[in-house]
Length: 126
Image 1 (cartoon, one colour):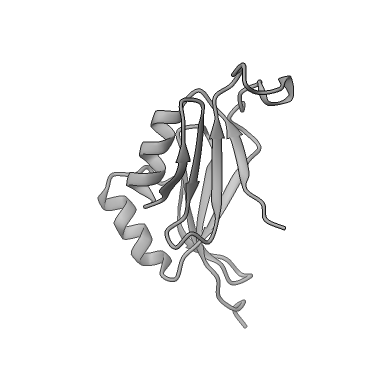
Image 2 (cartoon, one colour):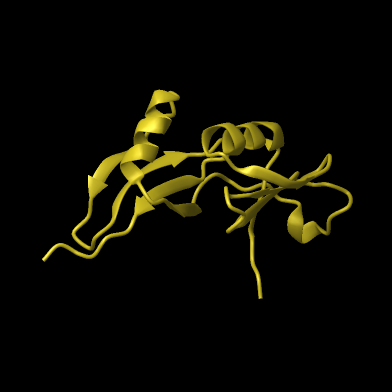
């Protein structure tokens, strides 16, 4: 079994630009109403769909409202990613921090309002 999350959004162009230029994602497939993207290394995919497209059933017509969804991207070196994104001028929504359960992470937001938690996992502090 394989899964990819999908977000229904009118912002396909902005979304493509953000994920490719900010996070280094690639485009797996694209047409005028659908965009399938992959992480560097092709470990995961995410898709984006235009709302109310006539090719789609009504279940897939309403656009995402911008709240209640987040993505987690695990990286080897969260400090390096933080420096890279801040040097690009990406707005940081949660500053780089350590959590007592072991995460070192920060968060950004995509053009659709999706929070993206960028994390390096570590064992909890003793």
